[in-house]
Image (cartoon, rainbow, N blue to C red):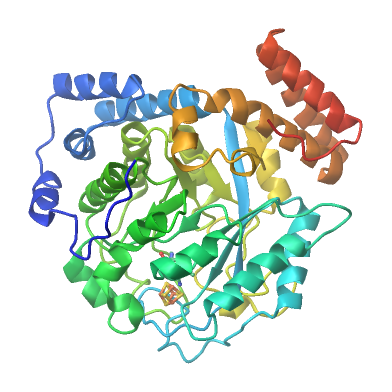
Length: 466
Ligand code: SAM
Ligand code: SF4
């Protein structure tokens, strides 16, 4: 695929998106037709997704949710990838009205972790059993690219009893192509950046000052990242800032443009909802509230329309809604999170968080609940370490092979967690689940591969992946 020249103009047609976000509710027959197409696992057009977003009666919503569950199960099986965010610092020169880190908030204690502190925070995460970290910071001269590169190296260098973090994803301010080329060399997994809102007028209001007030620079960030050679990028919307139908349609058009130009769309979509944040200007009163019903619909439509793109949900959401959304499409979740720099190893810094969390469970509690629900908690980093990223990952994902690599790898990483970190009761429950899934896989190639690998983990081998 030819690399595209980067557009400075927007690639979104706002009139078209606005019209699609207002389409009338389709007939029952039409809903049926779209959902049947969804079950083929080839995704939906933006027009079809827009029609589904207009659905509001209980019977059709139930049908939509059960179709999303079907797609989720067919492609991802019962695997649920776990990670933890690590905030390196909260200085910020931007003024995003919704965020506790915004420059105008004078009540927050600004913290920039040094490399020893980053290592300490990472060690705390490793002791819990984490293997995947998302590194974040505010946007400020305090965090030049050299700082981020050192921070990534510090996370990778931390070690506790032979265990390390195996994948660092990064969520930092947009940058130019040359800097992305440098970032790529730091061996990162996914580069993530949320558009917040795709509505250019509202964007201007929410981002009054600072570099982030340049809508177009942010909108084109993934084009620059992919142009620079980053294969896995993660997009997202901060739901609550604008009409959710407009946002989902625009996000799909964004993904489609990346696919058209680079042969591969985003690796993940994040679906944060606006939460109250101490020191923010608007989050107490959400401008465009998204109800739990609408939120379920959003996740289900994205799952059916973009079946091979991972959906990430954070601990912003409560335990109940998280458990539900796991069924309808979410494939990656954060667990045991803190949104304060140093939150895992420094004490007394709770008031310096970016926003409030809805799920306060520890990693162990989340894993316990996932196991009760029959899910495979996964810390797998196999694809990225085997170089199955970008187009290669999509080629692999599309024929349904995610299940054949990710399921065994997920089970093996779960067995490692159970052996090294779980208390006796969880260990027993977890290995029972592994035995059941292994038995269901049969005695063919995959089943044998899984049972051999689990045996190797039980015998003390670590970091096995296909
Ligand atoms: N500062 C960088 C940026 O803004 O892109 C890095 C990531 S920022 C630390 C992470 C994300 O937190 C933002 O993109 C925004 O969507 C989200 N966020 C900020 N305030 C929030 C709030 N009150 N509720 C939920 N999410 C929020
Ligand atoms: Fe800064 Fe990011 Fe918060 Fe905006 S969302 S104020 S850029 S940390």
